[in-house]
Image (cartoon, rainbow, N blue to C red; front, side):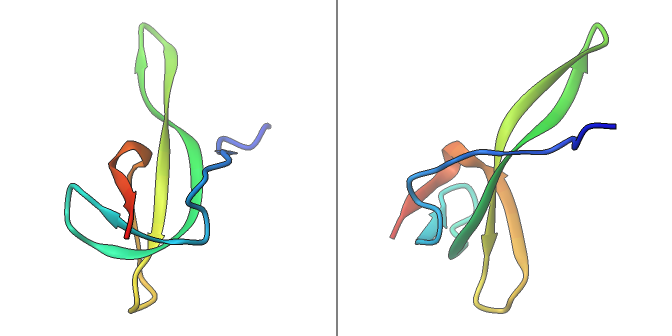
Length: 69
């Protein structure tokens, strides 16, 4: 079985970013292409950003929601 997640290159990887949806800040540790839903049995994918906060916990958000700080 293939890996369901595909890593995506992003210009802000490893940098300090802000999630504009929640205001949360942290380091962008990964962007992955994940299946978000199925339409008529066909998967739909979206780039999801993983942000590690100072506490060590990670937050996920749409990659379009991140900006450099």
